[in-house]
Length: 161
Image (cartoon, rainbow, N blue to C red):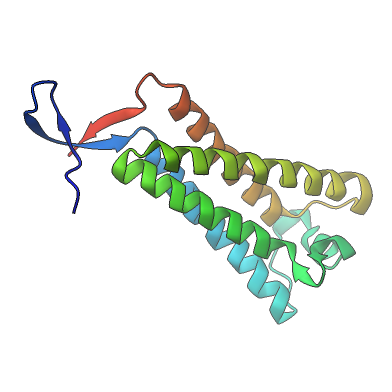
């Protein structure tokens, strides 16, 4: 197992573990996104409509022709994207591996581009809003903003317990 403790310039090892800045909230938001997208995928496959609350647009959105691509629920792509983001966020948080941060950032950016398209479809074409879809969008946006903030910090690393 590699030693992930911080090393001083003289080679001495401190007891602090190096952690990627904002990695924990990024991982939490990605895991939440996986859960929401997996739930929507399951409901779609089961032929059920999740409760939508007062908005009442979920049924319209989730039964529209835009809910699938080549017969595959769009939410499955969201779950896959969130899993990739989760892997990157965990690599960043646990190891301060900047490649993990890059993966989380790029997956989030790609996800936001797709979500912008699907949100446009909801508003301009379907004329209905799915509360689950908006919740998922907000989790991806928040996770991507954390990744952006981490990438902008000088070292991006913090000492952890």
